[in-house]
Length: 295
Picture 1 (cartoon, helix red, strand yellow):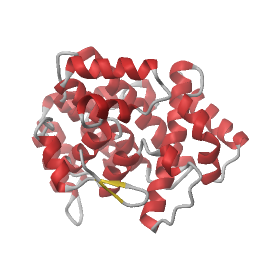
Picture 2: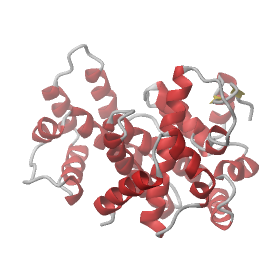
Picture 3: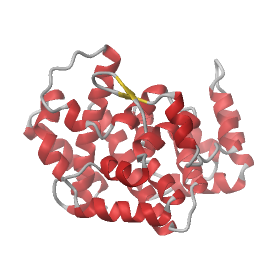
């Protein structure tokens, strides 16, 4: 698979995108989401109109209310209507819930238990990332949630397309955590989940920067390995978000397994230096997130 690269960031060309799409089918945006995006694209989006669009799809409306009334949102009282949810939580937060539900519904396969597990992990990452971005405000919390949700969406898509082969990839990755997952994927499938995820973000019309971050999120060792990069402001911003993502991955790894990941052991010190954080500040932030999301 051929990709153009700057000195720092991997870029996806149109030719390589078409080559990938010959083997992998990306799920289309559902009609409800297309209608929501058309309304949101207006100069003055109408909150009431967005609520009505969601309410037209009874299954989506029910799922949104079930999700929003879950203990994690910590609402003081039960919400009984989509309109009430949009007014109370804001349009971006409710739309993000719709997107999460739509993507999970769109990707179904033979290994559904594995696909569901990957979505659960993606949702955990999205929640922690949006929470951390409130403390390290380099991206809005709602955009951070989208990034966390889509960052690894290429994994369930590949598991859907190659159920046996990709299950073997994940098994090999578990045995060799020191190896980047994308290297194992490329060796077995001639593509990787970062590429597929970047295509998915483009296909679902997410902001351009999210696609670039997804495409490069496994390049932490190159980005923070000590080389003196000459970066454009855009590239520097991407690199900083990837640093926060690496930090969030460490927090999520602690939540799931009670210890730091091999990747964090390799690049954690340099990531914190880039973010101008010391170890004590990171531990305070990590404990706050672990305390909030441990349940």
